[in-house]
Length: 409
Ligand SMILES: Cc1ncc(COP(=O)(O)O)c(C=O)c1O
Image: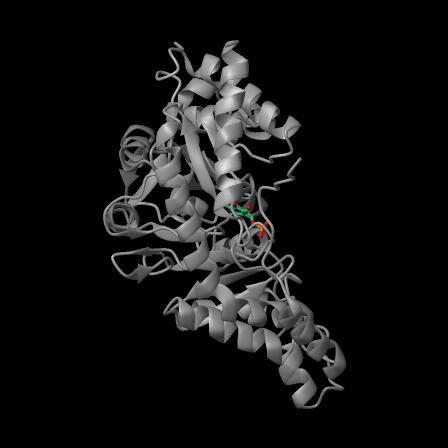
C-alpha cells in the first residue's frame, strides 16, 4: 500500500551544507547568515526590512508589541485561522475579536468586518469604543490563508477609514500576490512562518516584514531582550561591556544554523512554488469527477502559492441537509483515507469554537457560520514537491472508493 503524507518539506544536501557552514563558522546563534536571510526574504517580497524570529507566532507577538497593542484594546481577527493568530493578541493582554470568513476563499469576509465595527463599536473622539467593554479597537489582523491573500485592498480601505493598523498574518503566504503586489504590501507589517508545513522551512522560524524603518528598529530591539546594543554590534565594539535594558524585551532570535537552511531553501522557492501550482492545477482538473468536493477558489488577479490545497465538501451535492451531516461524512471520508495511508487534514480551526475562546467570550458555533462551515467541511489533500500525477490519481480513486463505502453502495 502506498503511504502518502500530507506534506514533505523539500530539503536536500544544499541545506545540510549551509547549516554545516554556519556550525563551522562558530556563529551558531544569530549572526551574519540571519542578516543575509532577512535581506533575501524581504527583497523577494519587495519590502525594505525583514526581522527574523523563532516562529510566526513570535513574529506576530513582536509586531503587536511594536504597534503598542496592550490591555484595554481590541484587535479584530478572522475566526478561521490557526490558534496562534488570536493567541498572539492575548499575549499582549488585548482582546481578540472574531469576525467571519468567506467560505470560498477561507479568508476574512469584508462585510463581517464592516458589520462588527458598525454594530459593536461607537466612534468617540476619533476612536472606536467597544459598546460592551469600553475597549478601544486598534487594529485588524488579516490572515492570508493557505497561500491566498485576503481581500487586502478592501480591508485596507476600512482600516484606513477608521485609523486602525492592518497587520498581515502571512504564515502560509510567502510569495502570494494580488495584481502583482506581494503579501505584506497592504499592512504595516506582515508575519511569515518557516515551519515545515510551509513552502520553505527553517525547521521552526518566522519573520516580520515592513517598509517602516522605525518599526524595523523597534522589532530588532524587542526580539533581543530590548537590549540597548545588539549582540552583533556588542561583539564588534567593546564586547566586554554589557548593554542596558530599559524596557521589556524577548529572546525571539533565529539562529544562523536555521538561517543557513533558509538561505538554501530560498534559492529553491520559485521552483517549489511552480511545482506546487502545477500539482494544484492537476488536482483542479482531475477533481472535476468528484462532484462533492469544491476545489480552492482563486479570485481574479490573485496569485495562489498553495501552501495547502484545501477543498470544501459540498454537502448539498451529496444530498445531505446540514453542515453537521456534512461534517460526519467528511470525517468518515478522512478516516477511510487514513486507513488507506493517505494523510489529509481539516483546513484549520474555527478558533471561536475552541474551548479557550468559546468559554472566555461565551461564543456559539453558529455565531460565525462561514468559519463553522469551513471548520466542518474543509479537507486538505496531500501536496508536496515529489507528489506524482500517479499519486494524485491514486488519491482521487481512493476518495471515490471511500464515497462508495460510506453511502453503502
Ligand atoms: C495562519 C497562521 N498563523 C500563524 C501560524 C503560526 O506559525 P508558527 O508555527 O511559525 O508559529 C500558523 C501556523 O500554521 C498559521 O497557519
